[in-house]
Length: 116
Figure 1 (cartoon, rainbow, N blue to C red):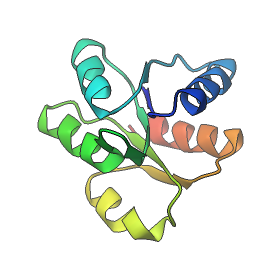
Figure 2 (figure 1 turned 135 degrees about the horizontal axis):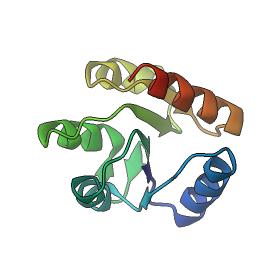
Figure 3 (figure 1 turned 135 degrees about the vertical axis):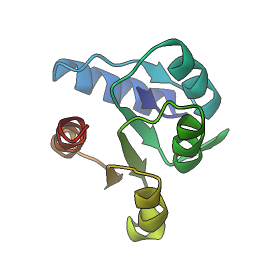
Figure 4 (figure 1 turned 90 degrees about the vertical axis):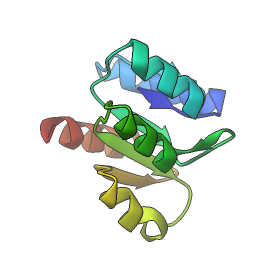
């Protein structure tokens, strides 16, 4: 599941991941992601850190509270170390600092899914 409140970014990442063979469902924010996760199983979550209706770490917390914890890759424009400790405590598998490359995202997803 790909979660980002920026529609253009989300659609671009979705197209790139689909070209690499991933099946991608998308959500425009935390609330939509939680609703989607309740209805449709996903193997992993790729989420932006900051969104209009919350943040990626809050999403990870809420998924876990609902018994829907999934391997997660967090995308952030902030320096990695600012949220790294909290993200690791919540079980986030990888943190990628924007701008990200397709290679970095695919490598993080592959490692995340392999460790699942």
